[in-house]
Image (cartoon, rainbow, N blue to C red):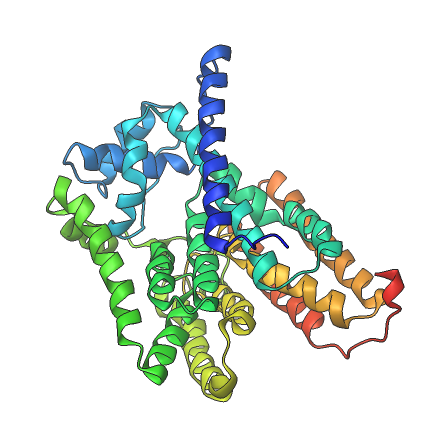
Length: 394
């Protein structure tokens, strides 16, 4: 009998494959003289990295605009990187390349990360081989999966933090789990309920070393940009105060409340998150005796995205891949064939609608329906009576 390959070795193989792909595409690019890439959201990370490497303010609109405009940014104002300063530790290497090469490597890296996340979820949720092809098709259909790659956003790294946490936590390697979960702080508002549950879990089990491992990772990542620019923390706070991200109309419940009751009432943006925190505390207390992260993670992700104070853009919803995999497994195991067909049809219809809306240039605020739909489909896949099925039909 052959020896089983550890999850860490499997992930390292995926990373190696991704690195080889980068080298291959670099050579391909040189041989075919492909030098132009569309300027998208990636330009915010690339320009911020360039400024940071030069010791300048990566959160200054005045400094960002000429850098972005030089590579083809056509809007009348720059796109800001709102991620906290420790995020710069991840994007700094990309600032050393020209925009086209950096964008290509960014795309390949995030594609490898997302494929690795799906593979990790298949293992974590013990999805049988006979339906794994269904999972991969649903992933390719899932609008946020393709949109985040096209937009050049950093959210796949947040997904890596979630999936890495699940893998390490299942192996009882709690400090490694906390260290990789630090990636979720790239967008701390997006999965805020994960932090609520994590803190309650740490306090409940007195895992102080786990908490310190996560904090140490964030501090270490912050020291890297500080080495280039000692004022970056202050610059971030000033930018967040003067140019608040709450100025954007985001497809969240809070965004809808402001649209209906008055955009000047910024506090409405936080009402769903307050309700979500209350729910999170009660939910943990209800399940604390039987708490397993693998079972609870999908609902935490879905509820966080649904009630996030801001952000939760359509591309950000790629963090829901674990919930998608879990829902498919639950539906296959418990739902009747008719119910599975209905769920697949609704899932397909939701994604086709999102693609059509995106192609027609519909404003992001009108995508507010997506998070409630994903949560409803997960609930419908989970809350069904176990069906009696002929095992020979698979």
